[in-house]
Length: 289
Image (cartoon, rainbow, N blue to C red; front, side, top):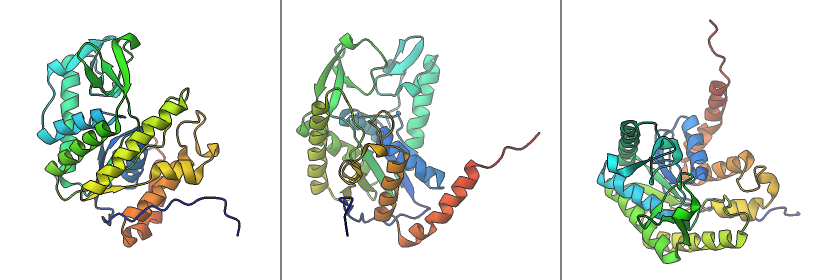
């Protein structure tokens, strides 16, 4: 038989999820797609209390706040282009008034904290070792908010820095919920297409740090979404038109592999009926007036 793929084996993760389980996540847009899919199928989920985040430093800062239950204050926000923003939040959290921005940020932090307290599985998905330090405060930001580039210094986190950040993140999760299983997966989304050498180095440092971590901490596991996309699928037909983001077909393949490695047999058997119900809900006609 002619083989057309090199199949990446995803090790079984000892969690045995069912449709009553709770899954939380933090990280890149890739993990958002995964968790959104679970949510559409009726699972209890929560993700990214500060919006999409890419680097391990910002992920750590966010999870420290969640763990310490440290609410945001007016001092955490600044005004730019008639909107109030935070260096720890995605642009989706920007609001026209300061009070609105602070209240919304704290509302999402509280909601996320409550879910983490009872979650069965927590997914961490860093995407890049490249970070931007705001020169004025000498601090790495989660989002540059279209502030002029000359106000930032770009640099690459080392493997050691990534490891330290991931270690802190895991400890924050375990402080909230010591029984939670943790899955770390490297986002397959390509960054810096104009400098793919930088992209490869960035991913390599993250991958090294991730594997060091799962070898050190109990209840932490690696899920090879990066390898499935780059080594098993290995074809631009599995990418969006920008040639950077895995497309819907690739995400479906990753999702099925994730289900196979984390769900109980009875939950997997129920998956087709869940998918059918989800499609029916999506195409349900609006009530006529």
